[in-house]
Length: 307
Image 1 (tube, rainbow, N blue to C red):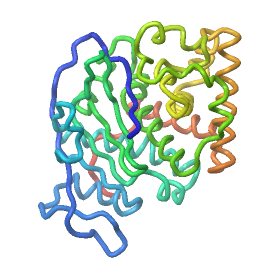
Image 2 (cartoon, helix red, strand yellow; image 1 turned 90 degrees about the vertical axis):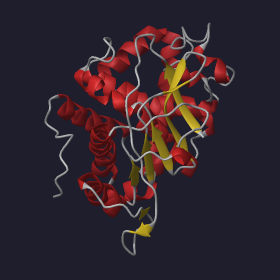
Image 3 (tube, rainbow, N blue to C red; image 1 turned 30 degrees about the vertical axis):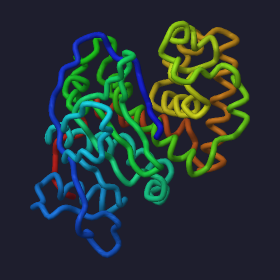
Image 4 (cartoon, rainbow, N blue to C red; image 1 turned 60 degrees about the horizontal axis):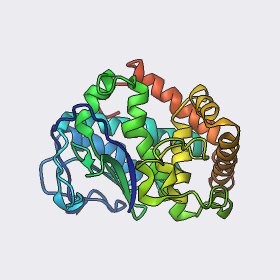
């Protein structure tokens, strides 16, 4: 299991609510996804039209303990917040790859299950898990019940709506999707040789590694965990942030650190272009444009109308 973890905020983090979905009968002869024998509500019908039928993706919002990590206290995502999360996944992630790489790419490579829970998964070392990817097939998204505050820009005073969405949700999806792509076709061995002796595994969140990581050639503290997490952090941070933000990180990294980070980015770009024919700068421009649409209120995140 690949885990994407960030340092937990010391500020108040309260519990909220959630729900998930099981399997039973095929929706049609072409679908691999099966559903429970419950009566479909409007959200179920919207998910069928926007996730299941076009992509064979099962977006689970009804709580299911077997899909959760029993090592953590988990709670359901509320119905309303699950609706918002589904729209965000569709508009900012699935539709972005459709636009840049084509729907056949998305159908082939995008994970076939999303499972959402209401609260973050907290570790006893002061970190929290924002999401995980399993076997190239499933992405878990946590903390879904905090979406209203994140959208309002009130969850963390350091983040406006766009930065908050990236930090807590959208970057996580792109990070985990990078792992899935790497499981399909591994990244170049040259990437691991740029900073081969500086990965610190689980110590990434502890002193002295939780500071000065940019100068050491890592785009985030968590990137120091391993070469695989480093690659996924490079990819996800790059495509979800504007150039001025990226340039600021390079300035902070100094000449030596910036050289290492640039070398890593070149390999990430080459990997995506050569392996999947995806221009990473075009993908970033698409994601950022769509983020601005959400921030400007131009996307209805609650509609369950089926076109």
